[in-house]
Image 1 (cartoon, rainbow, N blue to C red):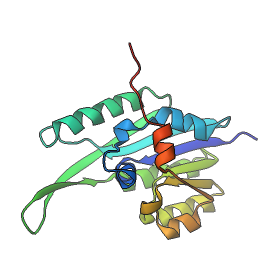
Image 2 (cartoon, one colour; image 1 turned 180 degrees about the vertical axis):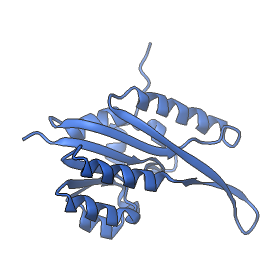
Image 3 (cartoon, rainbow, N blue to C red; image 1 turned 90 degrees about the horizontal axis):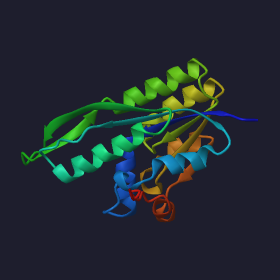
Image 4 (cartoon, rainbow, N blue to C red; image 1 turned 135 degrees about the vertical axis):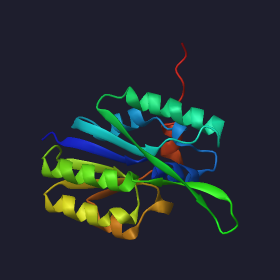
Length: 185
């Protein structure tokens, strides 16, 4: 029987996951379109929801341009919605500036939960290993929805792994197989 699948991507978690495989790996170099087609297979794609925050152009211009190209590619994927949150400036004890993303996890959780209540999917696929999503997964499963997790072994919460119906780890082999290559014009 065909299932309706919704995909929820924690963009920041995904970036850190790729970096855990190799410091030069970036979400810009990942072919989300083909990877999602592979994992959905013959099932019906209900929607893709990507959560992140726009990088600051003046902080790292090259990485900003890469992220904008990634967002452009994601916008071209049918049924993909990008939810951009805020970046907040913080300072270390040594007065070094850094940025944190605010709101991404709560937006993801609310969407996944509301979509379960609205019966928009049969299976949710969560691209994150963040243990903060443990309770979310419990609630979604209480609505008789299947939950699958795609993550990176180094970043995956044991509690979350034990709560989901299925866990898939992206390793170097998968990252290399789905390495995005620009199409020649």
